[in-house]
Length: 186
Image 1: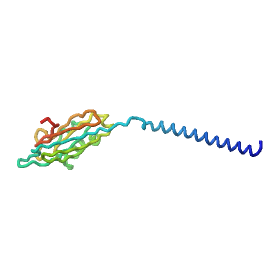
Image 2: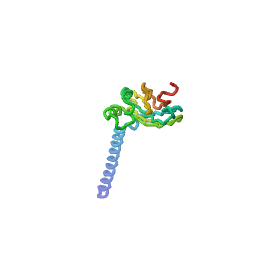
Image 3: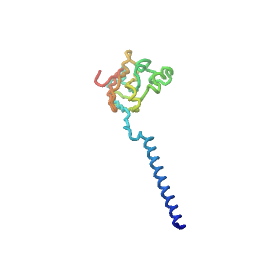
Image 4: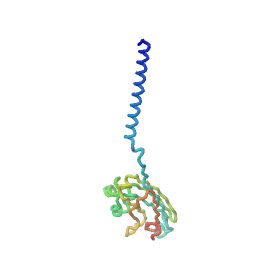
C-alpha cells in the first residue's frame, strides 16, 4: 500500500468514526430528551375558571335614608366550614384578630379571592382561576360575603356552597339590603 493510499484509508476511517459517533450521540440525546420530557405529550389540564355575575337590588345596603354601595368578597376555598364562622368585619378589616384571619385566609385553604364593589341597582362581574391540581384534589367551595353598614343578625350577608367539578362555571348572585343569595333564590 502506498503512502497516499494509507493516508486516504486513515482519513476515511476517521471520517466514518466521526459520523458514527455523531449518530450514536444524536440518538442518545434524542432518547434522553423524550424520556425526560414525556410531560410534553401528556394531556394539559385546564384550570378551574369561575365567572361570577352579581346583581344589586335598588335597596342595596339601605340605611333608612338611601341605598349605599357595598363591597362583596368572593372566594374559592378548599373547605367552607371556617368561612361561615367569625365576625364579618374580619373579612374586610386587615387589623382584625390576626389569629382568626390566619385560620380563614391560610394560603392552603384559599384557592382564589377577589373583591367587587356594587352600586345600588348595579351589576358586577369577576373572574377567578384555580389551578387544576387544587381543583382536582379537593372539592372546592364557593363563598361570598358582603360588607353591609348594618350586618344582619342571621348571617345572611354570606353564603357558601360546594362547587361542581367543571372546568368553567358561571355563578350568579343577587345582593340586597342585607343579604347575598344565588340568583333567583330570594
